[in-house]
Length: 377
Image: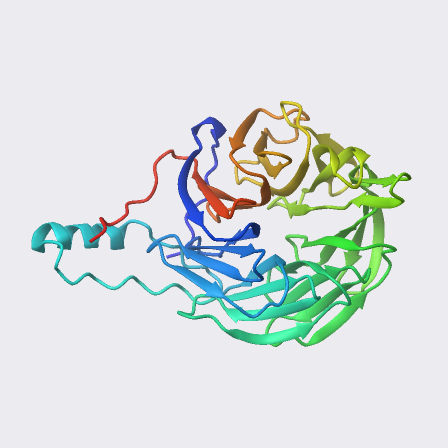
């Protein structure tokens, strides 16, 4: 079975918390796997936690020696969708017929996929993502300093990473061998994303310079201005900014970056969250601002299959913001009880998740109804 058709209609007011996934340390990042069965959440204890949204199991991925935020996946095509209905219903039927002592049906195996994570020490680690106990398969010293982001090409053959050494690097997804280094940024590179057609890559640095790379030639075709995402604070003699999140629209007609603007204090990170929507053909930017005034940073952004833009972030508290297509003012806001440090949307668009500074990953469902869960013994 392949992933079902994306959710074409979105009612943000229907979103409800489906699960609260707990960890002992603050979370840094989160991503759904390609089937939507697992949520991977990285934490300040240098681990990545894998939460099985079908069985409730929590598995630790230990191998990094620093925080991890960049996460991406390599999966076979077509992707097999997680079935959240059949197995729980089987368990409930068995327990109803035979009582709580009956032996249950084993949970179905997850489809295979590779998980790639990037850490603050500049390392990339390859893992067999669905394994019972994932162990590092391949470790690459990718960057001198923080490897901030990692992305996988649409055909699954190429991995892109970026970091504090001002470089964007390309690797073979199959074995982690180096392909090419893309040079031209003059400051830390915060984020990378592949265009859906697979021929181009965009990257954004600390100073809001977005580069559009031709992957056949390795040359930068153009610079795009996203300097609204950066500020030099003369009092602290420091830059603050960069794209904290980046995503392409599925048809490739636009991409979004998110971060902080209107900074008045770089040391304390005082400013306002913003999403910068870039028209791909023209390279022109449009600013998307939350419906209500808020002080903080937007840490993650995605396009919903309906075309809506969704971002999450925080300051003292967390927020999830919704925009209807490219309308400049948000249409809805969800209050989250902790600072949101990352945001992810499931493959079908039915769910989204935020990584909380309180150690909890909150998973929301747009239907307002969670999956069927077998009763506990």
